[in-house]
Image (tube, rainbow, N blue to C red; front, side, top):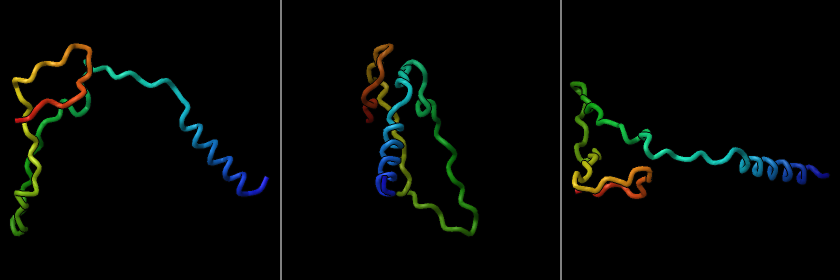
Length: 84
């Protein structure tokens, strides 16, 4: 076996071994996901003597529509809620 063939076999076996493994873990939609319980953080305070931050560079996070229907229990939400 030549050196290039050996490298090709090693790369192929490494890539195939990455595909195997345990069964996929089912997602529990009732359990809160990491991003669902986040809160807005504190604003950055610019020390005196430095240039102020650009207000237009901020990305405000809008609130979800409170009138949106609740998702069916046990079903995962496929789309995010509408934003007004």
